Length: 178
Image (tube, rainbow, N blue to C red; front, top):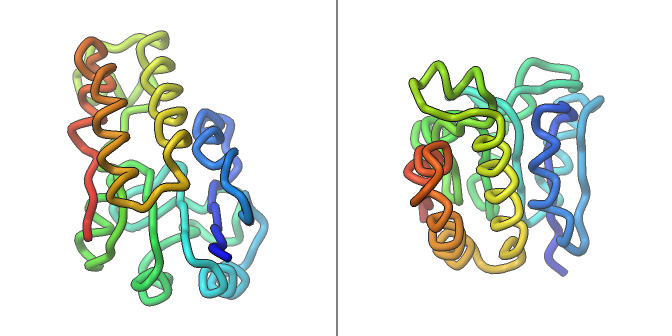
């Protein structure tokens, strides 16, 4: 049976991502407290790896983990043959740099400060609408094959992008590497 590992470091500002994995059967969720060898063993023993939270081009930040990054170059070899979803700011650069495959985001504006930094007109209401819609849309198709996930999220989240500048910005930065 297909086994999914969800790596979602505990961080109040990313709780909106939880609907992405709520409906996944046979999942293991890790939110913090593990050492790198424990994380690597879990990645090795799962088929699908979903990585969510804050990050940079170097990887997924290890908030509440025993290291600065919970996912970085140390996990690249383990991720090569996995079905991966990378949702963090600048995950696109991490995926491309390491030749990984999967569904991923580029810069993903999820907070007012980020909207201001990228000169977007987005208040808390628009950002919450974008965040919640994205998580719901991805969660509604998460058990599909990756190409279908990508196609559906681009289509379904795309309707919001037509009227929400934050969603438009994020929508343009979603991609699939096969």
